[in-house]
Length: 201
Image 1 (cartoon, rainbow, N blue to C red):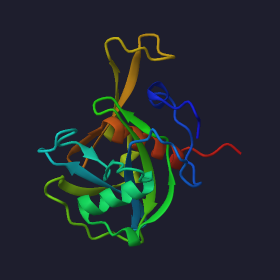
Image 2 (image 1 turned 120 degrees about the vertical axis):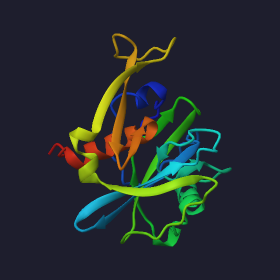
Image 3 (image 1 turned 120 degrees about the horizontal axis):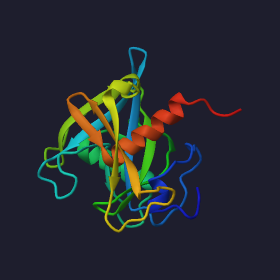
Image 4 (image 1 turned 45 degrees about the vertical axis):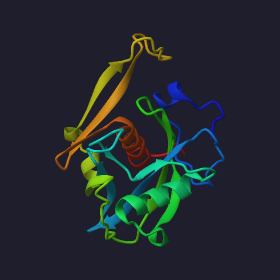
C-alpha cells in the first residue's frame, strides 16, 4: 500500500488487488463490502440502492458499507454495515482481499473496498431506513461496453496532476434499470480491469 495515497492519486490509475492482510491506514474512514457469488456459471456482484431519505448519496447505487466506528478495522466496518443494511450474515462471508481506496468528493470519505465471496446467492433483507433496493449484476453484464460511458468533469479550483485541462474521468454503468456512477463505478472499473486484463508475467 503506497504511503502517499490521496485525492489526486485515487482519481488516476489505481494499483492492483492486494490479497494480504488489510493495512493499518488510519486515515481511511469508510469501508464497503463488494460481495461476489456464483450462479449458473457466472460471477455476480451485489449492490444496493441507498434510501432517498438519507443525508448523503441518497438514491445512489453502492456497495453495502459506511463509516468506521472508533478503532474499527475496514473489514469489521464493511461486515457490520452489510449486516445492518441487508442482513448479510458475517459468518457466511469469506473476505478475499481489497482494492485501491477511493475518495468521495461530496462526503469526504476515503473508502476501503473490501472484496468478499459467499458460497451461493445470499438471502437478504433490506433495512428500509437505509436501503430501497438490493440487486445483483453479473460481471459479464458489467463488462459489456454498451452499458458503459465516460464523461470528463472538472471542479473549479482543483488541479488534477497529469491532466492538461484539470479534468478527470467519471464512469457510468447503466444496468438493471439503475445508473451506477461515482465512487462505486470507480471500484467496478478497477475490479473489472483486474478480472479482464491478464497480469504481466
